[in-house]
Amino acid sequence: MPRQRRIFDGAFKAKVALDAIRGLKTVSELASLHKVHPTQITLWKKQLLDGAMSVFDAPSAKKAATDEPRSAELYEQIGRLKVELDWLKKT
Image (tube, rainbow, N blue to C red):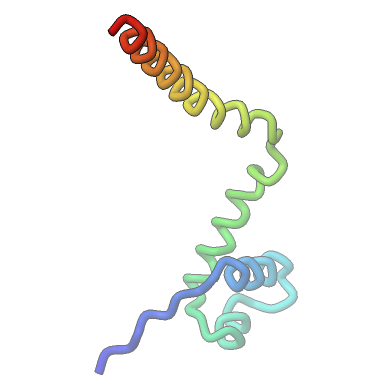
C-alpha cells in the first residue's frame, strides 16, 4: 500500500528552517528529529534565506503596486455606469 504524502504547514517549515540556519544541530540530526528528508530541510532553508529580503521591503511599494489595478478597474466601472445613466435619462 502506498504511503500518504505528508503536508507541512508554514509554521513547521519555518521552525525547521530556522533550526537549520542556527546550526546548533546538523541537517541529518534535524532530519531524524523532525522525520523529514535532509534535502527537504535544505530546500526550506534556501527558501527562507531567499525570501528574507521581502520581510524588510518598504510596505508602501507593495501597497502602491496593488492599488493601481484596483483603481483602474473602478474608474472603468464608473465610466460604464455614467454612460448607462446618461442613456437612461435620454429615454
